[in-house]
Image (tube, rainbow, N blue to C red; front, side):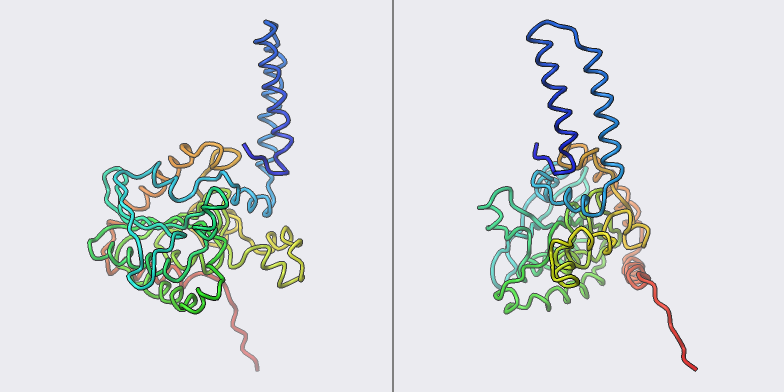
Length: 320
């Protein structure tokens, strides 16, 4: 297991416990009392560290290289998944997964960002940063869902849309804007789950949903902490300060009414126990889908519109 800097005291204590257990088995010596004391200390340490995470530490966990990605959750949650490819205009973008499957028998369309596990796969999937053709593929899948009356499940996990020249030439900003407009009118239930990074327009391009849920250690923000720090302080090393200012944690987002629910994770993050994390997601998604599928289609679209119009607070000042 790869440990983040702030997790090193936990890893060190786990190592000591494992060494003691091995020593007792090899030497046939009873050290159960000492092991129990250290395990209690470990439990207390975990609660102390994970109970007081900073915004930057949440960001670090959301980017953990062993954290489950969209395909991991698809395999853990869905039966009979069939992937769809291409945008019918340019090519297939491997940074976006789209397809059909069943969640406990309920047919649905699933869409999500997909990162890679190694350098080769990350280059193939452009680190989860989608091109215009990826957003067009996602929109094609959503329109298919609407046509056949299927609900839509979305997994968001991207640092942002792909920033290359080719992407800009093929209309990156335009397709994201088009997705925002058309998703607001898709007449079928949409549930979005931020499973890792929820970065900028890259996330919002598939993020207009009736219910927006965020995993406990994920984040959702208008810009990455590094990007914000580079703009405000001309120094990306100020990312921890930027993370605090952006109010990007799940707790902040719920308080600001940007999201609808925080989904619990196993202590230490979803990568510690992906199966348990998937169960929490499944419970949340099924509950929201059951509620949304009872709403008439025309009312569903109206409620979605009102939901996004109600976000944010402003004051009008009348002079004179």
